[in-house]
Image (cartoon, rainbow, N blue to C red; front, side):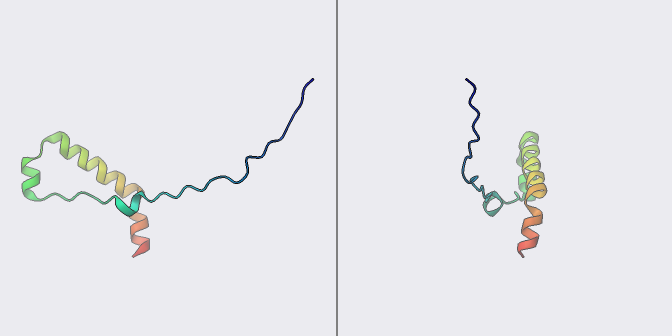
Length: 63
């Protein structure tokens, strides 16, 4: 016997992303640029680009 059922899962949980509240761009001094290795600079650049793509609009809107 085939029994079909329509199960409802209730309300869908709401996910609030608060990462932009605590993630900020990383700023470098001239000294930092001189002493950091190339890979660290690339990692910081990737972090800052991700922040810019995901959070910069929200930061401007909240000001």
